[in-house]
Length: 274
Image 1 (tube, rainbow, N blue to C red):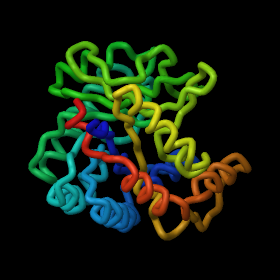
Image 2: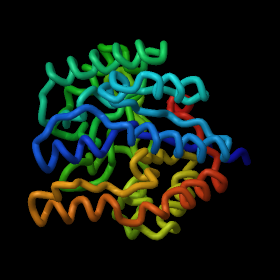
Image 3: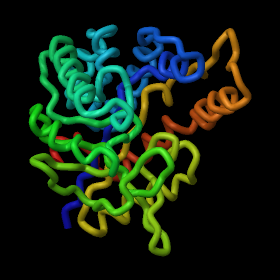
Image 4: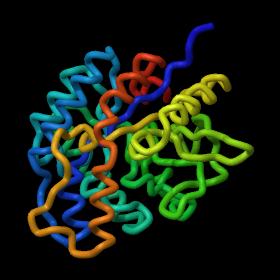
């Protein structure tokens, strides 16, 4: 039996600047840390012989076009992650359309490729945004990977299919989950790959593949940054300090765990699955 090919994806964003916005309300462009971290991640993918879909944040492409060009030149698929990393359910349809158009234009200028794939910041295509699929299809997006088919306080569509499906003229590639005793739990990478036992992530991939479905996994460059998130002024609240601590926790696991996952299962860009 031919092994199921799974989907590897990267949300190409600079968490250093995004955390400053979240905790201090400061808007600043992406920093060079995203370049260092992305190149470290690219080396891991190269050693595994794996190509991925990089969902590029538009402001990263505007600030570091050479980085986006390098990712494309190394054979990876380029998608869009919006422009400013604003939740879809917080900005509404017209602003979402503008973010989508602006991000695609700046990404195309950076690497010569116009993205046809999309992932919403924070997986914020939810039951509250049924209009998002139609907007994406009208704007030339052919596949999306924003739906987490789970119940979560910040994202998710609990009743959504766990396998790729068609909706409003495009293909949706949902994030990987693990079903335990009839309940779905998130197991698609990112913080889950850092915090959960590795066996949970591997179990989710095997479970999907036994059904004949691909498992869609994601990571962020900052999770491969050799330096932790540090801010000289310190986080403004105890909750902020906890947030930074959690973002830094267990990052040393990521290179080894990702390499192990990529050598255990076949992975490729999401466009191939769509």
